[in-house]
Image (tube, rainbow, N blue to C red; front, side, top):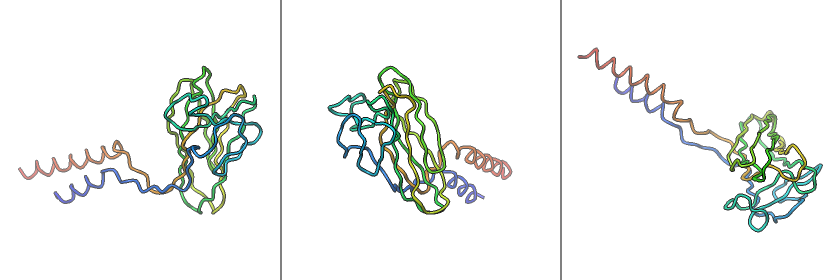
Length: 195
């Protein structure tokens, strides 16, 4: 009985992460500038522009290297997207850091990853926080990563550290707690019966 309880408790502990990155960009290899229309890493900008800011040019959140102002300085917010090859029937997770504009306005950013989409509302003073979107591919193909800041006032949300990974993610500890409590309850009942 003790071995069974021990196995149940062990099975409830967090599983180590085995995620593998298949794409990543922190924009630190790109040249800082306003109204950018080209980037390294396969990014394209359409229907407007974005700015690449950081050390030396509008470093609104120092210590983060280069990052993208999704509203550019042309008065027309561009779409910032990429196409990356992904394998068939595989679950992928897109993670990215978003921050508010740091300049007094709120922004909404629309994000598309493959077949999933989400809108994120950011207050001006929001610091960089990591967000995630996941989906499972149907077939092997190039899938879209898309960021679009709503608006066109030259002051947009900030984007950094875009990453796509696949694999087993860590099971959070709170999910394991009910199972551990059950195991301990069973152990307590078995001890009481033996007395």
